[in-house]
Length: 563
Image 1 (cartoon, one colour):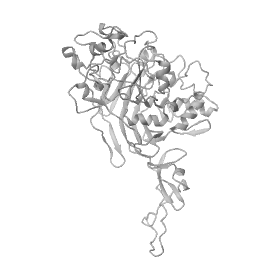
Image 2 (spheres, helix red, strand yellow):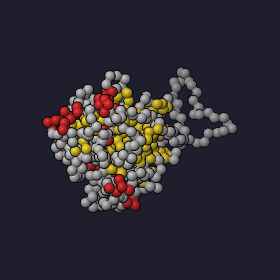
Image 3 (cartoon, helix red, strand yellow):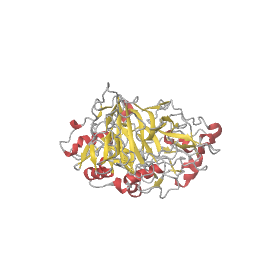
Image 4 (tube, helix red, strand yellow):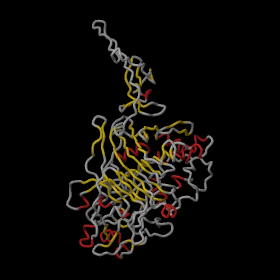
């Protein structure tokens, strides 16, 4: 994923500063009032319940930045304009002299109702897209900035489910939901940053964006809008781990983990690392490309045999996952030992549409067939698509992604277009000069001339993305499993002759309603739990990877009982 966007309005730039609007007294036009947003937490025993009081807030890059004690801008038309932000020696002065305004969400094209949020591509104020975070109250502190934090999610041995409506998102527009390891307090320090999470400060991701106006509390003075949009060569980059649950539009989507190697080295703020060299210090220590499961890319490649657009039938308009209708994504994060503290080992996906559960697609790479993300899949993908450069493993692999979860990650819901490469990495050919026959180059049907920024902003201003019914919890708890055959009754253990016991009947039923023959166990004589794909959280059929039941002991070893 690539993100280098800061939204600039015709009359002002809405980019991040560090002082809360409340600090501006009479010059505070709008204090931040975040809309309430329902998130549910689920267990298999108790079902799904409201997970506390949660809210949504807009990223600081979309907010009006003005001088304290006046109505003047600190940043306007892509440049620092306040004298307090005039050069790099004034990084701290700029941070304490500029404040953030609250957001009128209706004007920004954002509608939040209960457990759903809809974001329009263009708001009435001229803003493009949005980036929203789930926040919660801390219940502590006297300053407004310390009374809120980003809601932390640890998805190890858990799953997250949400419904997505992306039917109007065409070439060049992306409506992603993802998690990042940004500082949970937004970098609040009571001095340089008094705004904190309530005002959407502290953003970072695995692409190490260089367009963040304040990094670690200090003004990122070197940023000036030129052409390309931002001169970020000497600017600080804000890097952290990222887990893309869904990046997509009606053409394609990608499920992508992005671990980081540096963890928190070099930063005093959890989850955020500031670096300056785009080629070396930043990109070598962050998996910017990630290990992606991109539906269009993998189906087009088709295991290297007869590559072409005609192979693509899983995700898209009128396909198995029909992107002209809402669909639900379930993302499961399995650990090596089936516990909430184990190392992350596998990421699985299930779709639900029109009341039907749809298994994840399978793909063949390097002669191996997969239906989920694993370290081995990422290695084969790197060897096939990236000339052996396994940046995913180099930055920590699955374990590294799980380590980021253990520190708490923030849920991001967003909508944006790509001014740098027109989203070709998602829905077109990337790099665009590559031949169609280059493995992995074709990622969608959007042509090289489709999807430049002016096209979606001028022609698709009313496009929108909608996210709803966000749930998280135990694996298998956030959605209804499809019905299957009854599990066979395990054989009765033998009893010593000195104390004979009659065998237990398999499943007694009145004679007037006999039980039909039961389906045999798929793995009727496994030698061990591993043979059935068995772990503490259940049994997974090896071919499809779909959770089908449980492993149980039998007289021949272990068997995988079908539900």
